[in-house]
Image (cartoon, rainbow, N blue to C red):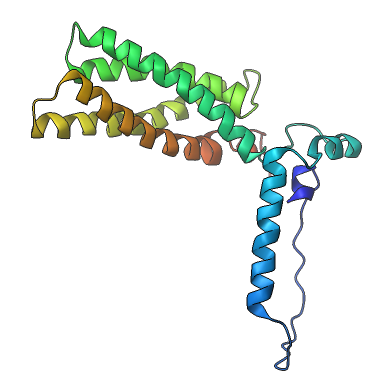
Length: 206
């Protein structure tokens, strides 16, 4: 993990395994030690006590490293900041638009207006993708992810209005819960698909 974060390439090499039926390895103790090691590493990466940046600089590696995703913790913090700003903008727009139109139309417009800005902000701020290269594709795929959020929020509103006559406060509460769920799925899709490092570099011709 440290080598990957420092920009070194990882390669798996197969080895021959010879089973020893008389092994003295304590599986439980070994597994617990491994788990404690993982927790120590995760805590060190989260707190920044491991000088990954210095190691990368000493090795002359570029940031971001092609094919290696940046720190998950750093991405989560930045994604959360963008998400909070987008959610506040969405709720404000929904409340303003709701005065002159139905809930579904207000939800569609508010979510659509904030989706483009959200994708652009996450592209640069969260995932470190700069320049115009692939910007159109990123926005298109971001709109596909937006469609998932629209389905969740619109579906939640449809179920709510089908069961009862909700007040404005209940509408907003349901929308917040639906948006939180959509946000988690959005982060996973943006990180693992739209802005995955391996999809940002042009493929060499075969």
